Length: 97
Image: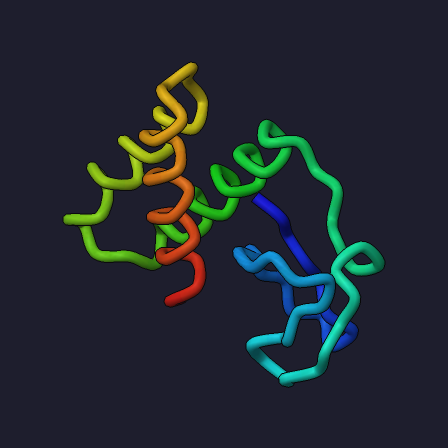
């Protein structure tokens, strides 16, 4: 996972392979090495868990079980693919608030 932060402040998970990326928000081109956020997977997971806790209060009741599964998966030693699914779910929930 490579997190980039644009000059406009937007942060996103960059999936490409180029040396430059285009910000999805302002369309500004940035150098990946210069704008990369160096965080461990554990730091990212902890941030996602914190954001999910905040989001849980704003979401309908039927999201609680999904958020609980996601939080438990991010805290555990789950397989890499399961953690990736949990991260993608967490990002989609946070992004849509």
